[in-house]
Length: 99
Length: 292
Image (cartoon, rainbow over the protein chains, first blue to last red):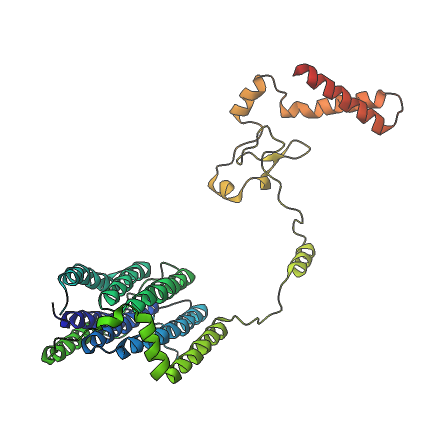
């Protein structure tokens, strides 16, 4: 088996994550799509790290995980506070700048 | 090149991962999407470990499956499980544009990958056995400054989450004393509600308690049972009448008995009330002993 299979899997997962962000309206699911994209990128990092025999790729994946954790915390806090004020988590309802 | 076992693992896991990831797009409920996502995360951890990155695999399980996805579940519980997607199109044709863009993204990435020529690959070889130590060597050797920055970022994120979800008190805090004062001022009931059925002939939830006059107390039956019409009548229940026929005094006769006994007590010569009570309890005790 070629290492490229892992990369193809990463690309498929990234595409699905991107499609989720574009298609879903529930803010929480949109957020999970972003997480899926980050994870797909991580898989690509780890695979490239293995191809080149260099651990730097794994370190970068580690950083991505840490930043993603911070991002999730802040993003979910935003979702919760928006839900408190507008009683909805649909991204279509958040159009305060409109009109 | 990879081994045969890894190939089997990959081809078992990868299709399931893709199906679970598709669940993110097609699942109607947010909870189902989250569970699909958890599966993808755990499978990714297995993929990392198969890819000679055991430390990252375990971190993936701990951070993503253990912390991040559970945080997602918490937030879903917080905003309501059935907060589904709105079915109204705010942007016209957004669905088709989304599909076109998504598929276009996939095609672009695939074509890039197709033009890529990968060498056979070196693998990590001997460093896999002590992967965390080697990782730490790179992390603390070349990436100390980014590591510090990430630390600051995490602290900032924690404070940001605290401040953003903090609920500001716009009015004065209502404590126990204020609640009690308000209740007294409004003239509402101050004591707890009476428990059901205590002075009726049974201890069931659906039988109202009787007040000293023998009238049923409606508020002693649970509000839900009253709303459903499932409460029972205290006195005219046929089951209770059967019990009455079995030799127990009917509740309506209690008052007369009490009156009779009090009249008897009045007729007794003047004694200390406490002594009389003591004698009465003693005689009761002896009678119960005899019965036993």
